[in-house]
Image (cartoon, rainbow, N blue to C red; front, top):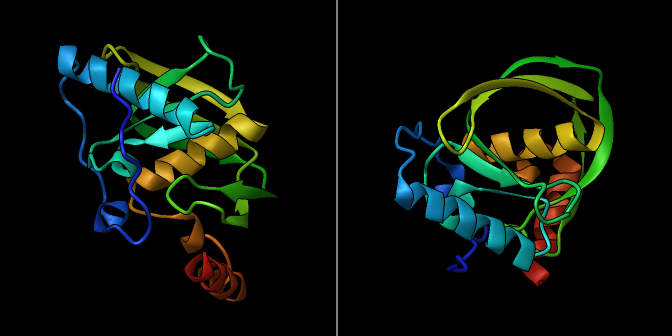
Length: 162
C-alpha cells in the first residue's frame, strides 16, 4: 500500500468540482485501498479523492473506524435529505481546525461501489454527516464554506496561526 499526501487548504484542487469516475480497473482498486490506508493513518473517518489531489467523484469512509467496515462511494448523488442538526466537524485538509456545521440528519443517496455496482442507501446521524462532508469535497466545498461569516473568520485566523 502507498500512503498518499493530503492536500492542505488552500490547495486549488480542493475548490474544484470533481469529474465522474468511469473506470473501475486495477489502478482504481489500488487507489481505493491506498486512500483507505491513508484515511486510517490520518485518524480520519472519510477521505475524498480531491483531498489527495485527484479531481474524481469518489470517497472512502468508515464512520465506525473499524477495519473491514470501510465503504468506497463512487459518483454519489443525494436523492433526498431529511431533518437538520448542528454538529462539530473537522477536516484532514484543514488540520487542527473544527467548525459547527448544519447538516441533514438523514440522506438517501445513489452511488456506485468500488466495482461499479449501482446502489441506493439511506444513512443517518453521524454516517449522514460524514457522507455529506465528503460529497461537499467532491463539489469543491470545504468546511469553512459551510460556517457563518464570524466562525469562518475565527477559523481562518486560527488556521493561519497554526
